[in-house]
Structures are given as C-alpha cells and as structure tokens.
Length: 51
Image 1 (tube, rainbow, N blue to C red):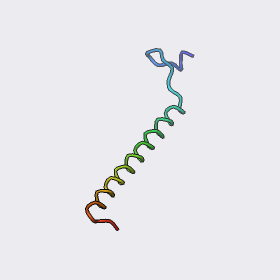
Image 2 (cartoon, one colour; image 1 turned 120 degrees about the vertical axis):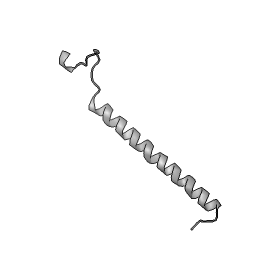
Image 3 (tube, rainbow, N blue to C red; image 1 turned 90 degrees about the vertical axis):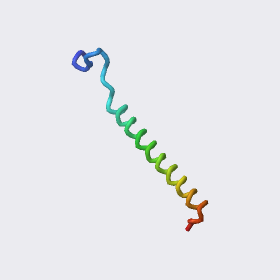
Image 4 (cartoon, rainbow, N blue to C red; image 1 turned 45 degrees about the horizontal axis):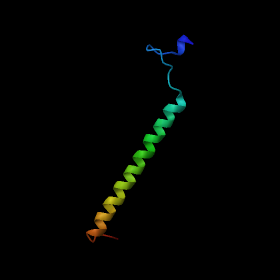
C-alpha cells in the first residue's frame, strides 16, 4: 500500500478520473466553440450577410 501513495500521503487518482476530466474539458471546449460560432453567425445575419 505504501508504494501506491504520494509523498504527501494521499493516494494517486485513478485513470478513470483523469479520462473523465479530459472528456469534460473536451466537451466544454467543443460547446464553447459552438456557442462562439452561433454568435458569429447571428452577427453576420444581423449585418445582412446571411446565406
């Protein structure tokens, strides 16, 4: 058990938690880009540049 502990005495995070954070950050970034794209599209539509 001691080999699995960090220097400060806490157990290391599991790979599942790390993958979970990676997915959460990825999903948030994709959603943020989607919102930015919708805002730009709305501004373009208001400016008369709609397709």
